[in-house]
Image (cartoon, rainbow, N blue to C red; front, side, top):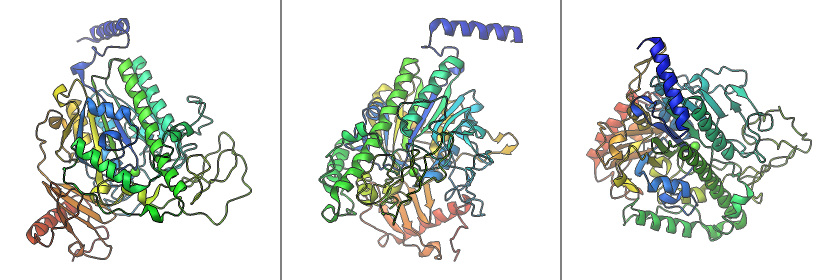
Length: 572
Ligand SMILES: [Ca+2]
């Protein structure tokens, strides 16, 4: 086609698109689907309604009803490594983020998203996708407003970005808040001026704005939208109207909620009918301040409720544009419920000489925020009722145990409570209606998301990007599972974070909490058949020494290949 003809064709298409209004993408080559990847933060396997929870998540439930839910999908058990594996399609160590964003001077532990990998946004740029991001980034050690910024979203494939460069922070005044490459504050951003600033809403609203702008700017192109919520990571911050919905709901403590969730999970078919609850971590009768502890869970539920409302607004905008049918929406969580103790101790004292902050003043501490913008101290510890901007509380181990019903352990760990996540896949044009509301029981991992995106976008995973050679993707496309077919996985799934290690091979899982200074073989490895014992209650390692040995050998081979070793592992 000559340039003149191409121009005429584009012009004709543009006129056609304009005349048909928003509800068309007929100009798009090969009809590649849009992709909306939504991830939440520090939530347990059974929190949302369609995975057994009592928390009100009608929008996620609706996506599940008209899509497919995966019952054995895995993350890496922590924020940074999950984001590195999710965005690159390789294990997090291979992408340089085996631990968090700290430099350990080892290839797998650089604390920086490597240039030997591409992000999904970079990969999809080669397939003509527009790429937008709203939310938490957290895969670079460089968070200063003065740079370097070469591993920030705009330098790793995204064309528009609103969100935070680092992890946790206040929902009313997030530290490291940026628009594009520029640091902003909730009060000096000319492009977003809500009546009440709340980060979850800000992420949802900016995501919707990016979708609206896309319809105006490039309706002939598919888009990739990465929406990375910080709900429901500590601090427990939520809006009063959302907290009010859960008033009194958790007054009876941990046990009734765990039991109700397990019963619902069995009804939904998410776990086997004979699944038992893992041991309960905390006794409600021994909780000293029950109203305080119940309030923490009310606020946690409200945070998730608010996120679901925002997902509803994103879905509504896709529907309004006529794009919902040809959009692959994926929802998942970055790690299991969090038993960390942050915000649960009362400081000895609070500053009394605080001054109000100006509109351009940045929160200098990421957590806890030192003060509110109007000059009040931020308070922690028992008795401080969570929710408002002058509080900073974590919901604690007892509720994290509830979030991870019926599994053992938490965020950080390779047991099922740490690494299990929902995955909802919704794509009316790409998933047969006969699969609507169905469960998919094949195991999957966040490394599969890149392969899936590349697959549906038409094979957009590059071997070379710029001047950099790109390592092969480790995950497999989930697309066959959308229609009930077998995944083309030839290897096991592997885990390592903070010496917590596991291998999932078929129905077998070998898992441990490792200890620094010991050789890998000296770790206390546990063996489970997760088909019959997903809650990991019957360790059968002693009865199956050959299986343990074989799986351990496989894990060690992977650990060397994937740059997990040598970390603090002894070789002998
Ligand atoms: Ca997290």
